[in-house]
Length: 198
Image 1 (spheres, rainbow, N blue to C red):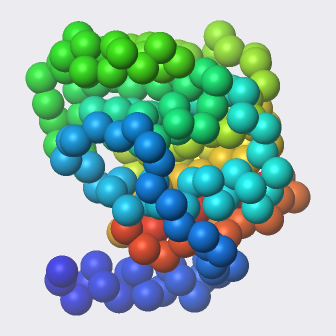
Image 2 (cartoon, rainbow, N blue to C red; image 1 turned 45 degrees about the vertical axis):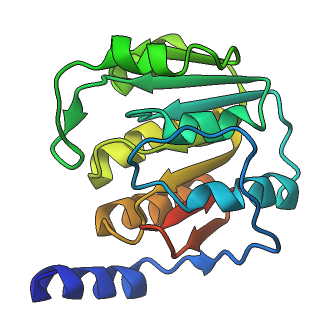
């Protein structure tokens, strides 16, 4: 990591302070898939988050499913999980050929998962449902994370954001969202960071 990037991350931690999330228990969900993911390790604390903040287990929505590692994690805890993604990658995760069909096929046996190929901007215009839990892991700019996160915070009891440690702009968006919506923000500082807004 270059010096400039490292400095930017340290400045973000001071400028956008988040309470440190300390899980009381860590447990691997029963049903998982084997796929390369920057999310590996975070599956251990999802049940702790749900229990700590008394989250119902009916409906979960996820923006940025990529190859569905986190989507499958959530399917262990919720009656229905809706994953929204372009399935072509982005500037941060890497551009990819359209993998919607392949990814859909790889999770077809998880009957509580539904995938929708869409840009989050188009999707949020059409959905006014309420969810118990939301996950935002899209392009890691402050503007887009904030925009998608604002919808997710209004439409869920608890919203999580991946990459608060590796992308200062995501950390800033989480900080600003919590402040602007009168919520509490936490940060789990491992596995690239996980912001939690309740």
